[in-house]
Image (cartoon, rainbow, N blue to C red):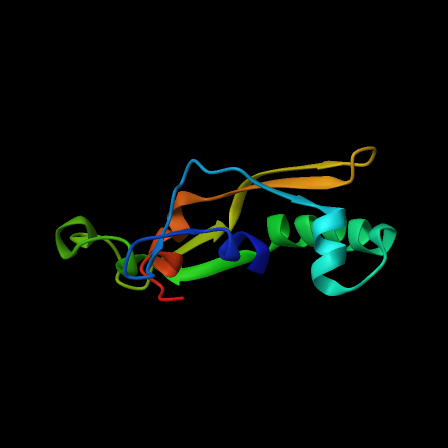
Amino acid sequence: MWLTLAQQEKDASGMVVFDPNRLYVITAKEYATLCDIDESVAYKQLKEGIKDIRSYLMEVPESEFLSEEEMEGKAKDRTLLFTVANHSVYSDGEGYIELKLDPIIAPYISNLKT
């Protein structure tokens, strides 16, 4: 996940600008170099990591996403459940993963200062 965050575009002030349509590609070679590990180990870690990211469920109070008007008539204790990524691919032969982050996480990564 930190590799996708590192690839986020930044504005002139250094703030993260989230692009919900961006597809992130991370190669085993790139990961191995960054982590100083063997490429075969890097690929195994990437492959397992992408499965973990897809299965990790976030829970956030729905009121953090909806306005007071949108929450009107709804129970105040509603919890929104979602995964961080809504698209992922791995290639055994080419040694890379692809990941697309779910737009719902934008408030959690946009406007972060690097």
